[in-house]
Each structure stands twice: as structure tokens, then as C-alpha cells.
Length: 375
Image (spheres, helix red, strand yellow):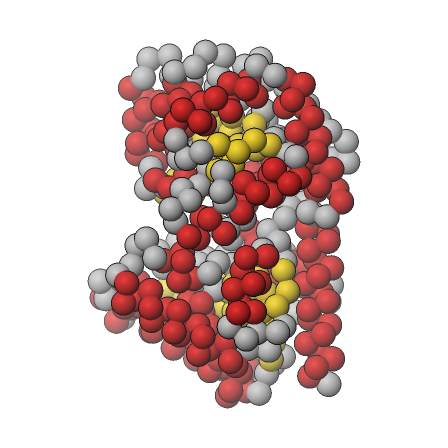
């Protein structure tokens, strides 16, 4: 596998790698540890990790946009070195997102192996809010060119599958970011005060500032937030400088503690700015975490996640503004029976289809098919 983050912060990649390892595959992940936070070599649950750090020219360049081509080259050379050493003659290169795919295509062409493209996002949509238009256009062009060399595409939801099919890709499988089921029975929250929870990326497009302001204006509410990102300092200051604040900031928590913390909530907040195309079509982890824990969700109206929440009867949807969000939060706060009903529907969905065991089966089917194709 090729991955452009340190692995320990990516639950999807961890689950896929572990599932393959648990089912008899030998897995090595070459990752890009941009901040040099982790050792160069590591083993996590029988998955071998080789981390590439920013050294030499990679360290001198001003940002990751310029570093990306060097990362592709270093990852390619590391994979080639691993294969040729006889230490690990891998049969498949599994590329996570577009910023690894060029290296995977080089390895496929050089070694004659199979190539899987695991598209966690529609990459051009994801970078459209942060990058110049010319970079976004290059990303779309690059993806269209590189997927011609791919043997199979894995992606996360129906809009993504439709997008790749529109580009002429016939072999596209959906493997969702589902979680392990905590309990087969509904476990009610044990809170004296109604507790909304958000765990994840702390950024402007996640409605966090607005949600904090709404919660601060309400009685009998205790808002718990965990994660890391650009709003960390803001959240620390809010908690520190607001006497009697009903917002609690936990900071970054280990990946393995996310579900146990989610279980402590009455409702899970999953509000995404729908002006961002990536947010509009993407299925956030929060929804699947809520399913695994049997908790209702407040999601954004007019997004894929909002439509899913409504379809499964597992939460409420709000417009992306404080007034609408506040009304939904009050509705759930003041109606424990509704919260329980929606939470039970969430768990039912998880037990039936939206769980990692089912996604693991689909992942193994992809690998079985690609192995038969090889033969």
C-alpha cells in the first residue's frame, strides 16, 4: 500500500490493512510522515510500515504541493527496492488517494503487478477550496490519465462510484468507512445533562464555531469536542475564557478511543458546509461511528450524509445555519424518546449492513477477483 499520511491517523487504511493481514495477506504500507512524528520502520498489528520523512530537497521546498512529485519518486524507489531485495515480492500495489497513484502506476508498469486505486475522496473536489483553479484542473486531468492503468477502483459511496463510472471505469467497488459494532443491543447514554459530541477534523467547514455558540446559549447542554486541526486554539480559548462554559475540549484522542467516547454522547454532530462539493457528496466518519454506537446524528440538509441519515431514520437534518441547527438540537434535547428511537435505528442499520465485517467481506472479494484475473 501507498499512503500520504503516517497511517496511525487513518482509520480506513488501518482497517483495510489489518483485514487483509488477518486473512492471510502480507501487507507493507509505505507512508509519508511529513512531520517526522514516527519512526521510519514500525509494525502495527502485523502490518509492516515504512515511513518516508522530509529530507534533503523535500525538506527545503516551501510546501507539499511542490513536495508531491518528490514523494511519488521516493515512494516508487522504495517500493522497487523492497521488491528487488527479495524481502517482499508483492503482487498488488494498493494506492490510497490520488496523491499516491502516480507512484503506483510506475510500480505497476515496471514490475507487471496489479494496481488498485482506493479513492477516499473525489480528489479535485477535496482540494478545490484550498488550491488555485489551475491546480484543481491538473488534479482532475491527472486522475483521468492515471486511472487508465488501474485494474480496480475502490471508493466510499454511491456518488463517488458514479463519478468514476462516468470516466469509463467499469470495475468500481464501494467499501464504506464503517466501524466495528460495539454491542448488538442498544446501550442508552448515561448522562445527567444532554451531551452533543463531535470527534474529528477541527476546521471551519465543520460548523464547530457555530455549534459552540449555539450550545453556549442553551441550558442543560454539555458539548464535548475532540480532534485536531486549525480550530484547536480557538476551542482552548473558548473553554479557558468562558466562565461556566458548557463546552469541553478533549484535544486529540487515540483512534482506538473514538467509539468509546462517541458512546458517551446523546447525539453526534456531523454538520458539513454544503458549498464544498467534497462535503456535499462525502460520507463522514461521524455517521458510521454513530451507527456503531447507536446514537442519533444531526447532519446537513442537502448532503449525501444528510440524505443517508434521513433514509435510515437515524437522525435529523438541519440547514447550515445556527437557527436551524439550534431548533434540531432543542428538539432532541427535549425529546429523549425520539433520541432513543433514532439511536436504535442507527444501530439497526449498523447490524444489518453498515459494519466493518460486511465491508471486509467486500474488500476480500475485490482481492479474490484481482487474483483470479491475474491467473
